[in-house]
Image 1: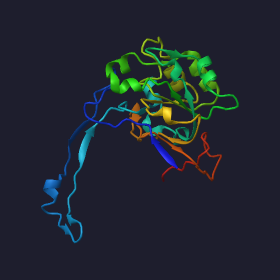
Image 2: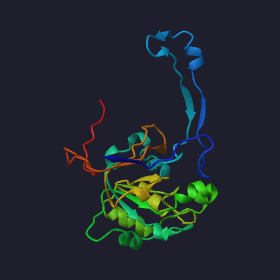
Image 3: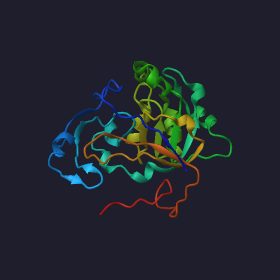
Image 4: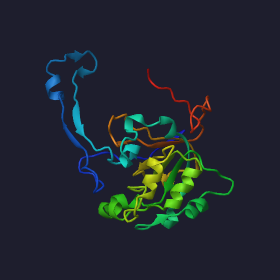
Length: 254
């Protein structure tokens, strides 16, 4: 199996969306190596014992992240209530990079044309726009002139039974699109369609991805959560096939 990391590393000072809080801030915790090695003793083979911890101030929409429905509507589900069955499993990756450009909006026809003959959309769809290349070249341009979906594209994915949509751009809606139609249809509709933003590396994926995961942190009252998104290529076997929209069993902790 080959694992492809599709997430940005979270660092202090990293670029962030102008409408969201600043990048992560890592603060000192209650333990430090210099302090704990004085009294934690010594391992007979591995030397002085020491530990460190830290406190991280983090926006729910930092880096590669998932929008919870709460992001787009009062009293909707928060990050702790997201259904893992909708964001883990086989995925379809649509190559839309020929349309790459500032503030380009992708239509339903664009999505249909990107799906090869004989292929069908899986419940998780990843949109490779190519816009992620701008992230490291010009962060201001990346965030302020990004790509997104038209309303008919959002409805096309919803009507196809898609439950999770990821994009290699900072938002599923382009910044100039009135009414934020993709966010509204995905996060306020029934059932919800989860949104993953700021993916990278989608150019490395085939049309049909055997296994994809982007599990959010279960943060109560949060409108979003950073995710560690990754894809697994190669032979992936699932023994229980009918327990979730993505075809994977999900068992809740007691």
